[in-house]
Length: 373
Ligand code: SF4
Ligand code: SF4
Image 1 (tube, helix red, strand yellow):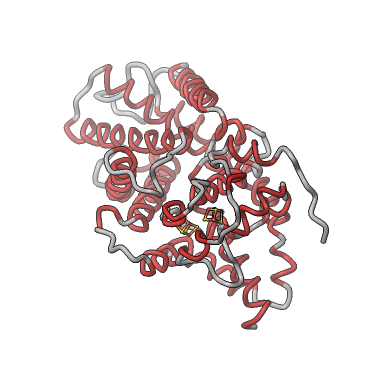
Image 2: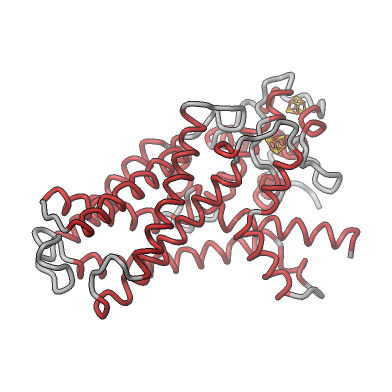
């Protein structure tokens, strides 16, 4: 099939964080050193060649960017400083941003000021909604009754949840269409594919395979798979706890020992540990794969960290039953940030949780179709 050339692609990819890949002279060192590159998916060189050619459509549907786990070894061996690892990361941002039906995702990744302004504006809007309803039948009088009502948080949360479902559905339909996965599923067992997808999503097994092939041993506190698992499972735990609160707090009241609180505490600890380690890797001890963190990605980590810390702040307040106007504002900040993260889920780095296993499944189906049946 003929490739459609897009001459504007290269500068566009650079806005997503790619280095100057026009410097690449196709020597292949990067592909040779990459422990994950295989004959069926030779990367990063092939992806770089496509970027140089301006093959936008092919790059948008390629699975290869998701086979890479940003170890950075290719960048260290590149004789032209073309930063192939950064280029692969920019392709992942590029693909995610082009799924977002609102178009905001592209600005989110490309313009730091936009990410900052949208974040602050959304916190302001959610916060204003929440303090517009006073008095609460759910929050006990000794807590949070001065300026915010649980009912307001509940209603705003429901609206945000509904909008998220619509946005994710639209993004997922685009992802299925663009990836070309449906023809690959013909004659296969869709349930088996779905199970494989779920297993990869919750275990990140391929990430572990990547580390097993790494020449350098990785200490546990720097282990990227453990860090990612901590963040993902922590976020899921918090999402479950919040959903249970949303659904049952009217009947079960506001007690710290009921299961939703316990799940939330464990989830919060896992997320705090994972996010702190991820930030530490970038700020205090950057390596080849984490040296060039983009503002949009670092901003999400910072958000998650504040979310976890304010969550524990509120947990302590609930446990020791102390009332203060400061706690009301911490609650508003916490709830508004949580809603914003949920709303922006599909257009930020958090979308990796779904996008990567999905593209790994596509790659697996392609490979078994070619040779292994
Ligand atoms: S090592 Fe550098 S110059 Fe060689 S193919 Fe890879 S990106 Fe291009
Ligand atoms: S960053 Fe690591 S996994 Fe990704 S292409 Fe380079 S060597 Fe391969």
